[in-house]
Image (cartoon, rainbow, N blue to C red):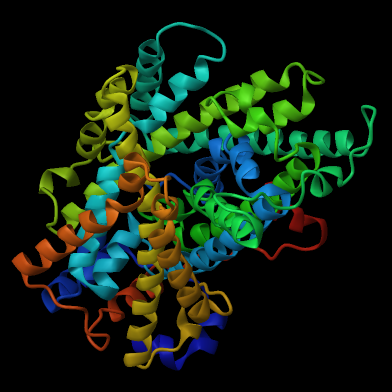
Length: 548
């Protein structure tokens, strides 16, 4: 069946779309199981999940995971470290790496759309031990409920009540959101995404009005000249400017964290291949364009030597946008604080989703107990959700004056895990392309593809490794060592090596032979489940790449 893909690409475009019957699928699955087609064996489990999401949901779920405290609150600290030009360059450089990485995960996920995509891709295209390592590091980082702790801090902008009260409220809300059909989760995140996009547009427009003199004094590029385009960090001169810029890179990496979630819910999407491709394109355009615009406006209206942004307290009071507007828009701090609350809530939801779906994917390969394959009548992997929710009480550690320090160390690990994800996504794409080449398949056979992705995978891999290795570089500067920072930046490296090496030794796994990687089963699936294409956008419709 896959041979027809190779020999009749033109005919496929002219043939009417014919969907396979359940009998066809069942028969093929039986034959595939007998012949060792692992992909179809995995699809047997995938079809027990709900198929309630579309590109609208996937795009917004990813978006709300990206637009959060990194932009609305932490960008002020990044500006203080790097200066206006330094922060812009940092967002541009990391944005290019993220864009390259997004191309890789999109091509892999559109070719092989499965739950917890990049974990399964690692096992399928590279090494079973790699998938095991990636899956369990993801579960580990996802089960640390740092977002609920952050939400409790944000709420203290309005009240002095104990953070434990709000941790409880947010925990109940997260559990309720994840206890029903995944579509309910998708719709909630869609609403939050619209609210965030609206806030970003308001901040950009209001910031430009202030900069151009709409409220009095015209600022222009004044703050680019004084205190200057760069900030000297740790030392003086050009080296100090570079150190400030590189420190900003570490912060900006985590502001972009979450874009890899685009392939997380592939198994629960209707027409997953086209939904992932469309959502991925729109997410990148939105994130890259709106991030750069927002940060550019920020550099115009807030000086990098402002004392408030240099010492953020985790609430809207320290937001650089609130500082810039200084009471001119009285409701703005409350709106920003509310959006940051939704960001923390969304991130908490995403972690439960990530942990439960990764457990499902690992269980399908026998790398986690089979009980995690159980789903309820709504197609929800309820055992995995219950497991992830069981770790929520750890959030109360942040309330204690003694345990909060240790808890913060483990919080930092979740950030390093983002870079590990990016590295594995790049490796997965390289492995998939090696298999294509070894078996004589052309890239043109990919259902959805980008130009230049072969180069993009190596570009993304190089810089992701570089960012991970230098993420804690400040600890190697005389007098700057901090154990919590060092632990958070580098613990993920030995932890992942132990998981990978341990599984590889015990199971005696080998790297996948490119000539033996199962591609035929996936091509069979593409033929059995043809997906109608979206109409091409024309004229004013192109604006939907950013907004709709």
